[in-house]
Image (cartoon, rainbow, N blue to C red; front, side, top):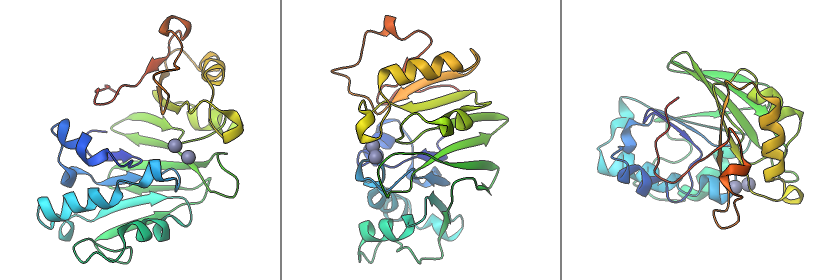
Length: 219
Ligand SMILES: [Zn+2]
Ligand SMILES: [Zn+2]
């Protein structure tokens, strides 16, 4: 978002960032929703991009990484013992391990953290982000519960996952439609984390946008 904010960091993040003409050292804040590898597996390469390819800008501008409790340890395991990368105790990284219901501010970005239900015994957060007078909400991976309505309230854009299996803690397409029906028309709904092969016809998803890799969306 604006080249400054990352919502989760899957393994393909750095490659996609370069393909979009972005620079990893422009990123100020990474919001990690939960510790599954498809959401955090690119964090070591991202740090490599910041530190190695663009010089050590972290000395002037620390990078903030936020996530649910335990995320710092988990990311530390991914970084491993590399001498080139800042480890989880490096003062050039700022950590925000957030409980559900909490809020924090980084630079001019205000973030509300809301607990969502995903996998058993794994804390997972959705985020409501206020930046430049606009509000973006992001579910991370979650099943449809009242927490999602709380998360989406007042947002200009809701990014909702559709992993497609309630029993595995994900939205199904009918859940997306149901939620869309409850939200004001002014809230745009953008679906991510879906299977392109099994996605329904777009005509059956009124007022719902499907995110594409490398596409740009205005907020
Ligand atoms: Zn997950
Ligand atoms: Zn996932």
